Image (cartoon, rainbow, N blue to C red; front, side, top):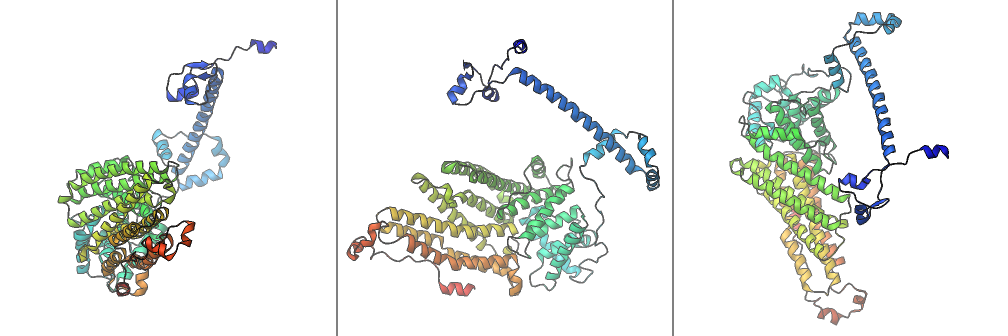
Length: 594
């Protein structure tokens, strides 16, 4: 009792925890409750002053302990640094006289040495800076292609392929002869991209590319800007092999991202133009490929990306440098869509959050599109077509959440909004596919793997959107008295989409790139596997439509009393006069494409 009486009363803070965090005025209402917490219905807690002071003392003690550990680690680093700088003979002597070495304190190294050691978190031998395949003859010297062919393929790449992927531009002195001697892997990747599918050496060239990647990049951990540029070109027009879920393509893109960081492109103070293009190209490719395959992004948009964009917008070395600025900005918006929609799927915001987020992103896309349209007139046609395809893909992605049934549980107004989004999704998908169908035959050869992923998304999403919209209309028909309007509306959607004929036309256009390829090689070719998948969708689509119509859109009402309706009653409801739905699909057209 005597001891407790000597303890001073515990003082409390003037503001509670909630008001302190909100930086709001805290006015006490009772002894343990303020007016603001009472109004908001929150728990009101006042911290005790002595407890806070004791924490500060404990914190100070903890800081002193950490400082002691830092000093200990610094001395250990100093000892290792001096030991590594000694010659091999002195090292062997120190092993023989280990007790003497431990008893004597080494001379402390300079601050510069400590900074060098502390800057790098990893240890080990430096990777090789020379090519593990330097002794191997180039593809020209091996006789796979002639010097004239090499020159033609490099010129073709610069003229027709670079506008689709301006991050891969070559300087004026990077001719075929120069690349053969100084950058054989870069030449190898360019030849592999441009070489026609019927060329006798095409398969050998692709095997050579993978040999360089596995031996030089993976086994020997070789890193160089030339290797990165070659990898970007190979990934941008990747075609072989096309495995399920594309694991090899994903690994190659991850190698590009890893090489960007290994080369220090993410933190160098001054980057050359080639390094800036490589950094931006890696970001553009990683976002596009990983987003298209439903994977989380492996490279984030940061201040270094913004800095490179700003610098390249003022570049005068190549006209294509000004194109890639808008292209990267568009790709950054795609990453923003992924992040926003992923957050919605994991939240409980409901339908209104979907609508608000979609409208906000739509306004942002309209702003980006308006700025791009101001400069499109000065761009070459292939670049314009690729950019418009990217914009149409973004517009599709905006309506993507209309396919998520669990986000649209409410009915009424939200159901109408969802139907509008589905109609927009169908139309944007159709526009993208028609845009590729209308390309000149030669330009189809130049489209990148990003455009192929857009097409794959459009073909699959369009079919799903049509089926979802028909099912929603069928659900409304079950709730309302039967009429011709629902079936007429369904027929209008099917006719407007014209899905089978549209996709069959796309298959015909893309298969022009497969001339001269055997059936076995088509199965492992990116374009060949895509065409095969589209044929399966075309075959499946009409039967799925009829299944929804037969099961979900009967002629009679969907209630339990509908079974007892007589033939006369069904006739009075208009069943007999209702025309059958016609899906625009003919066996002749399908057999002709297959």
